Image 1 (cartoon, rainbow, N blue to C red):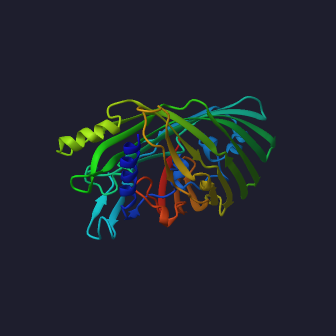
Image 2: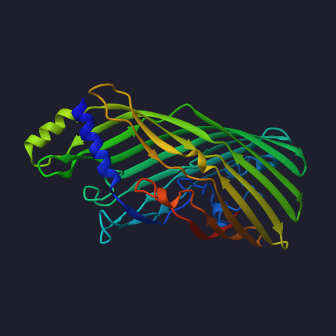
Image 3: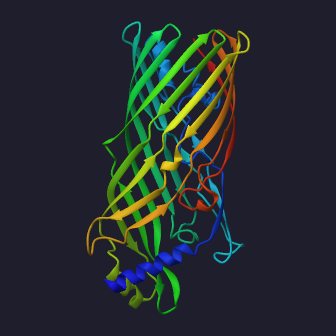
Length: 392
């Protein structure tokens, strides 16, 4: 047991020596704010409008003004979200570079809304507000492989909501959230080869959780349509802590030296299903929006969004299998910070059946510069959006 601990302890020290600088293209952490096509056309500046079924995500207060049954179904194609790594001294060196595999994902969303009485309304949303896949090209040669070769997060919310129209111009919505999610984390394990006194790849670690079933939160929204020229809205979605349980498996990598491989095989439980636990603290989110009718056909909205990423402090990996069926526990520090994003959208109604939408967004990364790593590389983002809607 003592030799095993020493071998793995040196492996962790080797991983810590990998010094890299990331230049990522994706921001907002692993939040996916794009949960409705109409709102996306205005860069997500939708809190003070909330006038289609995606209100269940952007501002539940809009549900209070629903006067007929309606539904919408869609998906967001997220592509070309990647990061590049440039090496730094002392290792792997300034000449080293690596690329993240191009992301191509289709997180879905679906909404249904229904009046119950003149003042009470019901809605059901299925949303994917968080998600991530970070996978690196040529993982066996990637300099950051002892930290991460792939990180994948899948999450969707089931969101029943009740709306109450308190006055003809003021409404409130309150909903519950059931979050169903799973994670996958892959990396290499290293050890010092006593024959070469150099670090060697000895295993590929794959950690996959089961889908969670008992993670709950809530959302609440207010919408005040002051008059035909001005409205404001406020929306809040709670933080949710999700505990994951699953299994990890380590596949041995041959060094070509049978004596060294046998020694490593005696200390690491290769090929076994290793029970493991981890957790993710998903942040709370809040949005405040103001909408102004500039003319009969032009509407401008400005939103400020806050995300409480300071809850995301660490990703613990705790092996629970006991002696001979586990690895040392680890903790991946994150220490993210709360951030704001700023959105502006313009809606131009060209006919009773047609609208053009334009938007701008500045999204601040929650990740401190010193915390950028191969696991969740992130950066600031400026976005430009355009959309078109047509109704029959």
